[in-house]
Length: 91
Image (cartoon, rainbow, N blue to C red; front, side):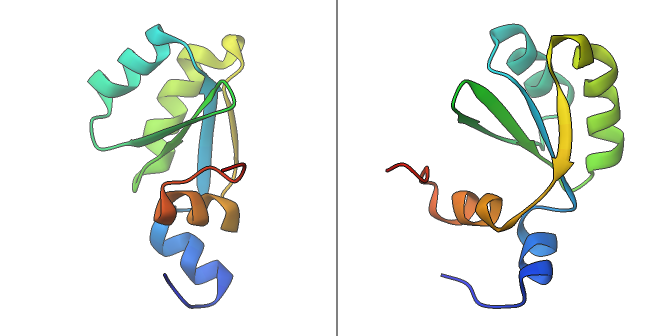
């Protein structure tokens, strides 16, 4: 599907960070209304949020939903795989 150095693939397809929040309808609606350019994937009762502009997007979501279990983490090759294939690892 894609070839390259892991760091470059992550930067090209995901960005530096991924936001993870609980799969809750209120949170999903907030992200969709406030950040329509963000891409979301639901995996194991968590929503993973990807955006080309993560810092501003993620800081606002973290401020609002940190107490509900929102976390930021470094992006990785698994995120690239899921985005490019649209498949979960367990499939």
